[in-house]
Every structure is written in structure tokens, then in C-alpha cells.
Image (cartoon, rainbow, N blue to C red; front, side, top):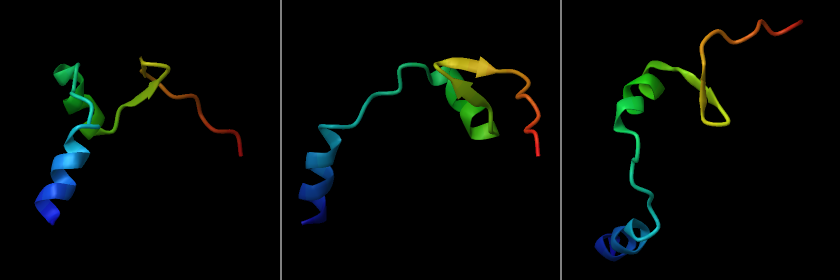
Length: 45
């Protein structure tokens, strides 16, 4: 049953089309509208 669930979910998964950015995402980089945010602005408290 699990095999069938994974098999059906696999049809909807997107391929990673920018593997060079995966390391940045894992490191905690932020992206807005597809652009890397170098220095996020300080949040006003």
C-alpha cells in the first residue's frame, strides 16, 4: 500500500531545476520572487 501511495505522489513531484541552489537553501538562504536576498532588512520591533 505504501508503494502505491509513493508511486502516485511521484507523478506530482517537481524536478529540481536548479541543483546549484540546493546548497544555499540548506544553508538557510532566503529567496523572494526567485531572487536571492543577500542581506535581509532588519525587522522593526
